[in-house]
Structure formats: C-alpha cells, structure tokens
Amino acid sequence: MSRWFSFGSLCLSSLTLISCGNGISPFASNTDPCTLITSAEAERALGEPAQEGQRTDATTCVFKSTRDSANAVTVQVDETPGKDRRAGFNKDRLRRDSVLVAGLGDGAIRIDSPPSLSRLTFLSSDNLITVMVSSIHATNLSDSVMTIGRSAAERYGAAVVASRIPPPPPVASTDAATADRQTGSSLILRTSPVTVTQTRTVGETDSIGPTKASTIDTGTLVGTWQAHALQGTTKHNYLLVIEPNQSWILSSLTQFDGVLDAEAGRWSLDRANTFKGQSWKGTYATGQPDSFVTTGSLHGTWTKLDEAQPPSKIPAELWSLRKNTTSVPVFQLKSVDRALVGIWESTGTYAGGPATFVWTIKASAASDLFIMDQTRGTVVTKGGIVQLQPTQKRQRSVGIVATQDGGFTTSDGKTSLRWTRLTPQSDTSQPL
Image (tube, rainbow, N blue to C red; front, side):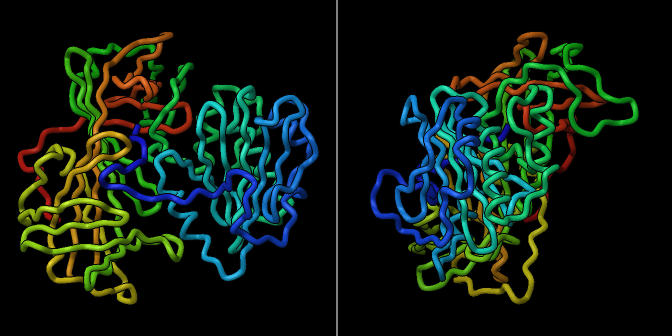
C-alpha cells in the first residue's frame, strides 16, 4: 500500500543492470552466461519454443523465441575484478518497484515491469547475476523469472534455500500471497498492488480469529487506522482515514536511518546496516542560517524547524507514530558541518506525486530521513471483496481480506498489513 518509488525534483538515482543493444559491454565475465540455463527452461519461461542461447557479448546470453525474437530470456553475469557491485545493487533495492527475495544467493531482488518484463538480480559473493524474462504473450512472468533464476543460481553455485523461493507456474492464486511473503518482499517496496480476487485470512490474528472480508459492513471502516512495517532498518508507518462517504486518504511515512558525512559543500548519507558502498550523495550550499540547498541524490531546498515544531504538511497523527531509534556505533562517527545540524523540511515529488521530506541531522552524524506521500481513493466492493480503490487508474486496488476485533487486514495478493484503529491521544507529540 505504500507508493511507488521515483523522485522528481527530489530523486534517487538507480543503476540499470541490463545492457541494451549490441554495444560493447562494460562488464567482464569468466563464466559463460549461456551455461546457467537451458533452452528447455527458456521455453517454459516464455511459453513458446526458444532457440539455443546466443552470446551477445562476453557477459550476456540471450535465448530468443523462435516465433518472435522480441520475446526472450536474457542472462547476464558481472564478474569484473575490483568492481564494487554492491552499491548499485543496493540502489536497486531501494526502488519502490523492487521486491526483496530471501534465500537466494547473498541477496536478491525482483523488479517487475508489467505486462511484458520481469527481472531477477542476485549477488553471489562479489559477483552479480541478472536473469530477465521478456514476453508480450507469456503470463506469470514474475513466477517464471523466479523459477529460471533459481536454476541459474544453482548452476552458478550460489546459495539457494528452496522453501523460500516461490514455486514455478502454474501457481494457484490462493498461494500467491504466501509465496511472496516467503520471499521476504515488503509492501512498502511493492506499492502498486494487485487486485485481490479471493477471500482469505492473512497475517497474525488474535484468539478470536479473523472473519472473511465478505462479511464486512463498510460503515464500520469509517475512522482513522494505523499500520506499521519494518524492512531491515527501514521503518514504515501508515495512516488511513476513511470518511463516511467511503472516500479515503492513505498517508505513508518512510523512515531511513543512517550516518551523514557533510563537509566543504559535499555530503553523503550511508544507510544503516546495508552493504558496504550503499550511500546517497551530492553537494550542499548554506546561504542562510535557517535553510540550505542540496543536489545529487536529494534535490531540494530545506527549511529549518524548531525542535518542538511538527512538520507543516505531515498529519500530526502520522508524525506521532514514528520511532526515534537512530543509533550510531562509535566507529561510524563522521564529520558534519555544524550549519546542517537540526531538523529540516522540504517538499518535492515522490513516485510521481507530491511529497514532504523531513531530515533530522545530529552533531554525532546520526541522521533520519522521513518521506511522506499520500494516496486517495474510495471504498468499493467487487466480487464480494471490499477493496480500497485508488483514484488514479494506474494504481491497482488492495483488498480487505480479513477482519479481527478492532481491525482488519489488507492484502495486495502478495503481502499484507494489519490495521488497528487509532485512538485519539491528548498529546501526540514526540521529540526528534
């Protein structure tokens, strides 16, 4: 239910791992990529006959359909000596359209570009292997790329935990949510959810147990609801307000914690507990005492907030849900320009929509970056399932698949969030 990872005036850059065309590859490889999958496996992934793999360069092998050369399975191996591939891999992990996959290599992600492309990338030691399935005819591309990617990982010698890899197609729709939860995918990075087509109980329940969503009286959904998610060290808080007329607003607050290094007009923010080399960076200028400007990974003009002053464009209820848990080990301490110490607010675009950004910077170099964006929609019932349907047509609905005492569970068919009613508090403020 979170949205949709792209920055406009405030952006994160990501590294494209698949080379296009037949130009000279910037990578070097000792492994023949054509040996990692078979033409029979490519045929199953494409759903049509495939040619034997053909090397397009030293690192890339393409298995093309015999019927349509635009439909293909591509394998790429990057084993360039002395190259830091983890930084680029981690930038892709931060994309809103990426799905984290557990139990495959030393880290894996899947990026789906429906309806015709799905890509799986995994690390093995310091090497990077990418498998891509491209087809305008095949269905279940994400399942196909997971299956063929597992085969490639096994042949490459990467670690594979079978129980954590989604099964190959065909996959019953009732198993889709369970399969992707086993991969470790998170709703916050998967914010273009698919419509739920079956009623099922999802997530942990209390002693009374859940009831099927088809029994929901939509009038009982009116109110303010909260949910939480954690992926690694990245925290996500959600605030859902449903009005009596069945309109709703979903506010999503994502919190990244890390360590800031900022001196002499240059800054870099290293995410906490991520692979070496993961950082956002750029330049900054401090023209006035209560503002500064950043470029690079974060483009924006920042205005200073008083310590007790809440952000002006973030709902107070949502802001109160955040956790002030940033800690910085002694060995990570870095230098920070004193002019940047404080609490700062900026606005920009996030995943194609307006967003608010709050950046807390401490003299110890500990730093938290908050990103808040919103989605609007209406509550509808389709096929006996109550759904939260976004106003924008490019975003797909999320189903309410189960109810519990005091709350309900939503699912996009892959992951789920459990919502509880937010109880009004006399004082929701909390220090940064």
